[in-house]
Length: 140
Image (cartoon, rainbow, N blue to C red):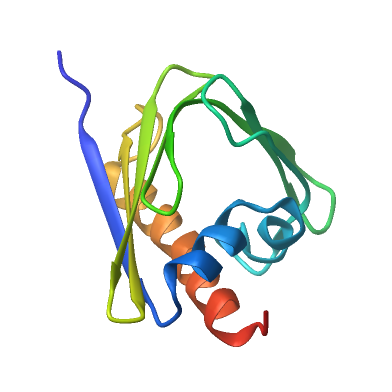
């Protein structure tokens, strides 16, 4: 049986160089990588190369729960595309499409089987929405 693909997207009103940097540098990842204001991302490590590892610590701010979101890169094309395989075997692809100073970020990921697809889509979209707010409001 083929795994369902879920797609989320956002138009970021910033050039692709800034969007790429803010999406991939750990000091930025920790400021936007959470779906709910009751959560945060206290640490992130990112070895952005094929075979490199990505690890973001996700935690409830009250300390009640936390986990490492981790993956290994399978493809990296600077300012254009990132693909990685999560530790649970699911695949994720992120496309950065620059159009006249706006960067469209499209994330396609394999659904997991513990939560309904719509819940997963809402969570990933919320994270991407946080990224949009951060990238558009931060000064380089």
